[in-house]
Length: 327
Image (cartoon, rainbow, N blue to C red):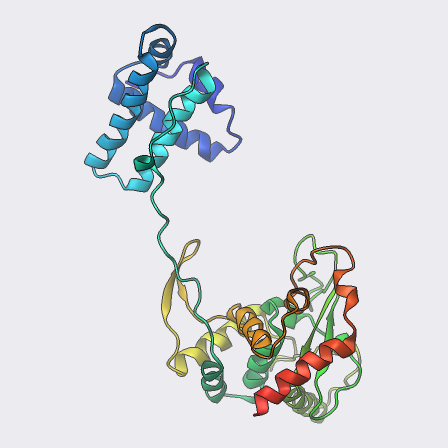
C-alpha cells in the first residue's frame, strides 16, 4: 500500500534536501504498508477518534519494533521512526507524545580518527626517512603543525628575517597563498594571516636543503619555494602524506583505523602533526590558547586577536621547543 496524497507532499516540502525527502518518503510508505492506512486516514485518527493520537503514537512504535524484528539496524529503525512521526508534527494540529527514553537514538559507533603521535614515534619515523628531503619534510610537519597543503606554497619571502644556523625562525602564512599552479591553497573563506615557526633543528636542515639546491645551480631569492622536490617543483600535498605514511609503516607504528566519514584509513598521516605540535606546546608550558591556535592556523576568536603577538614572542616559544628537541 503506497498511496501518497497531497498531505505527504506538503509535509516533504519542509525539508530542503532531496536526499532527506527521498528517505522520509521511503520510510513513510513502509509505515503506510505496516498500518494499512492512507495518510488521510491516519490524520483522521488523530483529529476525530477519541484516543486516536495515542493510537497513532503506538502504531509508530510498533512499526519501529517490527523493523528491528525484520533485521533492520537500530540506526535505520530510528530514522524510520522519527521521519514517520515528523509527518504528524507538520500535518496534524496536535503532535504525538514525546518518545520515551527507551527510543533514544542509538549511540554512534566509536571511531578512532587518529592516534596520538609521541616524541618517540616521531624519532622512529625520522630514522626511516630515506633522503634528507624526506627528513626535512617530517621536521617541518613536526614544527609547523600546518595543513600539508601550506608547505607546498611557502616561499623564502614568508620567513621573517634571515635563516641562521642553530636559530629558530618565524614563518608568516598570508591570507592568500598560491601554489606553483597559481591556485590559492589557503582555506576557503580565509581572511586572516597567521604565523608559526621552525625550531633550530628544522632551520639547520632547511639551510642544508637550500645549499644543495644552490650547488645544483639554483639562484635562490625571496620568490624561491621553501621546499623543492626532485622534479624542480614543490612537493604535492599527496607526496607529503605518502612520506608520512611510508615512514610510519617502516617504523612499525602505522595501523589501520576507522573514520566516521572515510571508513578505513591510516592512523598516522600528515594531519596528525597538528595535534602533535599542540601537545608539544602544552608540554613546554604554553598555556595561551589563542597563541597555540594562531600557530595552528585556526580562525581567530575576535578581530585583531593574532596581532597581539610579536615575532619575539613566537621565537621565544620555538626556542623552548628547540631546547627540548635537543635535550
